[in-house]
Image (cartoon, rainbow, N blue to C red; front, side, top):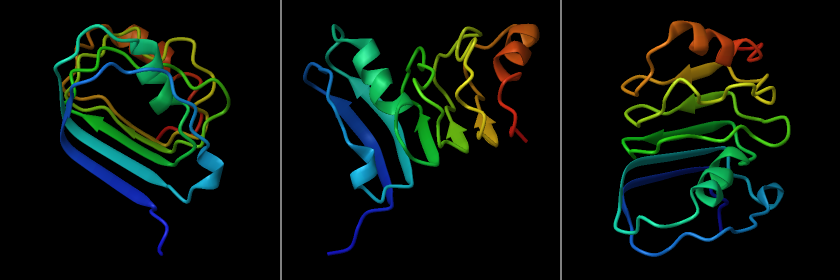
Length: 132
C-alpha cells in the first residue's frame, strides 16, 4: 500500500546467470538503492547487462559497496544521481572516463578500490560539474 522509496539489500548471493532486463524507473517512487556485500556463484554472465541496470537507474542515491565489482558504466543519458558510493570494490582508474552524463553528481565515494593515478581520477571528475 505504500510505495518504496529506499531499498537496502545486504548479503546478496548471485546464483543464476544475469540477463539483460528492461526496467521502467519512471513508474516507481524509488529514490535510493543500497546494495552491500555481494558474492557470486556464477562467473560467466554479461557484466555489461549487470552494470547497465545500475548505471541507468533513475534515482538520486546509489550505494554498491563490498561487491567486488570491477567497473561501472557511464549512464547513457543525463543522470539524476547526486550521490554514488562504490566503497570496497575493485574499480580502476578507468571508471567513468569520458563520462559527461553525471553533471548532477554531488558526492562520489570511491574509497578502498584499485585507484592509482590521481591525474586519471581528475580527468574522470572534470565533467561532474556539481561534485562537492
